[in-house]
Each structure stands twice: as structure tokens, then as C-alpha cells.
Image (tube, rainbow, N blue to C red):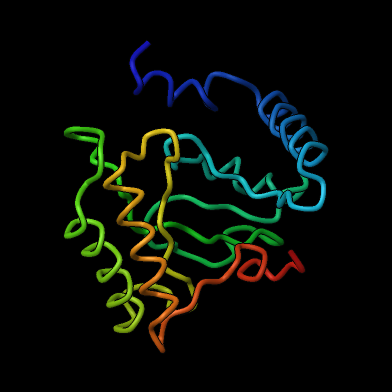
Length: 169
């Protein structure tokens, strides 16, 4: 199947009850495997999710949602917080390796600028996608250097997803 067809099949070809049931089973399994560290946050395949599913996530026990690019709302459904990523270090259209420091930093700076100017939600942290199995050495080196620089900068800080979502984890 083409990737486009696989994306469509994720939701549209199955009843909501089936989709929610699968998500709940997955959530329960991950919760059991990662007991004290698991957060019930939905990160949909290809960062795309049907609005009808978003509305059903809180009733299914999810309190977080993360996709890609600036969020339209911090709470897309009652009881559901959304925190997105804004920079992707993988060159999906080319080598599928590291996209390059300039490209990744441009995405980070764009989101920071948009937050500052009001073009994006100023309360949303700037997130960086990670694709651990696809990262090559240049990607890992860049992320390590970025992490160190943010830690050293007076205006930078790393926050946990639990903190952003308002949980104790």
C-alpha cells in the first residue's frame, strides 16, 4: 500500500469504537510496561489525526496530544492538552539522514519568533522531533550540542512533557 493509503486507513476505514479500543489497549500495555514513567499522550502516525478522534481522546484516558507545527489551541478538546514539535532533524525528502544544523535551527528560530510576535501560541514550548532509529551520527552530535547550548543559555531551559502537561511526572 502507498503511504497515502496507509494514512487514510488509519482511521477512516474503521469504526471509532475499534480505533479507540486499539488505542486504549496500547495505552494500557505501555502503562504496564513503563509504570511510573508513562504519560498517556497520543502521538499519531505521520503527526496527523482526525478531529473526530481528537474529541474522543479524553474519554479514552488520554490527556495529551502531540503533532507537528504550531498548535491551534492548547486544549483542542476539553481535558486534552496539546504540545507539539516544531523542528525535525531528519531530511525526509532527500537522504533521510540529518537535515543539517541550518535547517533544524531555522525551524527552531521560526517557532521562537512566531511565539514572540504572536503568530504562534506564546505558551507552547518549542519542541524537537526525534526519530531515534533514523538518527545518524551528525544528527546525534547536533542534538547533543543543541542540548548543551540551551542548558548554558540564560534564557533557555528544558522542561519535561509532564511539566508542560501539568502532571507531576
